[in-house]
Amino acid sequence: MDLNNLLKPLLKIEDVIKIIEYTKIVPQGVPDRYEHIRNVFNLNIKEQNSRELSIADVARLVQTLETLLPRFGDNPADIDRDSVEKDLQNYISKGISEIGTVNIIPPLTTCCGSLRKSGQKACIVYRSRFRPVVGVMYELKCSKCNTVYKCSTYKRKGLELYYNDVLEQEYFMSTCDSVFSMEFMRRIDIDIFRKSASFEGIAYAYNDEHLGIEWMNSLNNTQILDRRRLSEAWYKKTLIEMKKNYNLQTEIEYILSDKLEGILECEKDVLWEKFSIKWSSSLHTDNCNHEECCKAIVIDGHMKGTRSVCGATEVKTIDSKELGSIHMGCWKMPMKGSLYCTEHKHVKEEHKKKPTEGAKTEEDSECNTFKENGHLQKFKSAGVCASVYNCGIINGMRELYGCESLTQVYIFLIWLAKVLEIFPHLLAYDDACHLKKFIMNPIRAEKSEYSKFLTTLRIVVDKMHFANHVDKWCRRNVNPYTDDLFKHINTEACEQTFQFVAKFKFATKHMSCGKYNLFMLKISEMYNNDRLVRNRKRIKEDK
Image 1: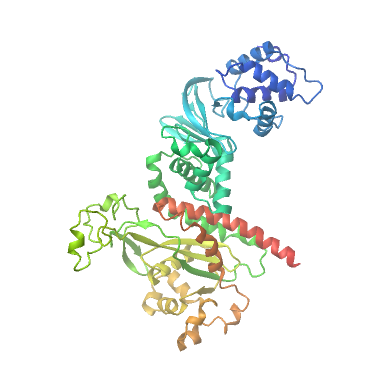
Image 2 (image 1 turned 135 degrees about the horizontal axis):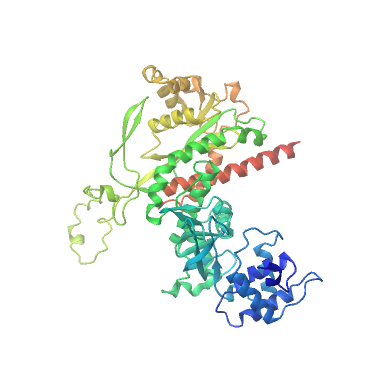
């Protein structure tokens, strides 16, 4: 087969790739399809040696490219999707969103055998700058190994896995009928971090912009972006991103929607451990440039970013070498209209508000509006306990339940001592007097090497809260103003960090355990990267 003859009259690879991109955006079934492609191509010719095409030329080229040649996986001409869309926008004032469907072809072009089309599935494609459109996801199957290639995954021997470069592809398949452009996924990250936007706010704004404000009156519009569909795609993408960022898995199995929460709960401890290792390593110290980098750790609890939890108490057990077995309440999300999760739904609900004495007459009314009865006293988590270096970099975070108890803070410190590559001997905490006495307990201090390590720390109250400590013991033993080592240490690093974290207190209130932890992990990653840039910038400005 003579490729040159098949591609005539095109002479350059740049023109071939442009035609390929046009055929994906202007799909089969669009009236006057070949004429549209011809007009766009001829309108945007930039080189003198590229000649104009006729409708017959375009028809023959499109048929050849769609039936005989695979999709170009690499782009040697460095033509990106943006340039193609700009070409189309020059031709159609409303942009490409009004032309038709989007064809999504698997990124693989070669396998051990020949790749043939094995199926196609209709889906809704959500893109950042354009209205949602109906798309078609094609499947390719290898004739030799029977591997099936899809938009973001491939299925081999009954196991469906994500591509190693799935986050570098143009589209991300969340479910079999929902596809998001990676540009849109990156835009969501920015909106969450810079605008403190919730998934509901992002979804509503997208629908307002692309479907008009009347979209809320439409009951059967399948193109409406639902916040649950948006958040599901974001959590799947973010989980894959974090696993690759921390080198946890080379092959990641496709995440089913009903398995997402279970996977997140299983992975949260490992992800936080890798986060702490990363941000206590040379990646931090070599790029921070802060004059007092990693000289001290500041810990504190933040109770504004709470979420609803199951009301069952003393149903979970945490084993600690230093403290023994600790009984805790359930941290799962309660069922709708209940105080308890599905696991503990058999627990009798005895937490409804009791009626006020003497209110019998009001209760006997047929109206169901008496406010003293019937309202559930929901249980909430106690936020998070965060560990921050004095240079402003978060190095660890743990969810709190019930209250900011000394037991939970102590377990968190033990965990940090195990995983942090850099644990300085200076520690600031707003309740340092009680914490120090708890750590220095002679029986507890000898339980492990980590409990012994904690006894060697110099612990003081952070400067902002020290005014509340009036006891003579506090003034003598945990005073940050009399310890010269804390003279230039920013002991308010946690409080400053919580100014940022507090922006998400409404977005997190109805999250489940796994999603809450992944959300906090992601915004902590973005916060740290931003803080490194700010630290370097401040050093340059000071010079």
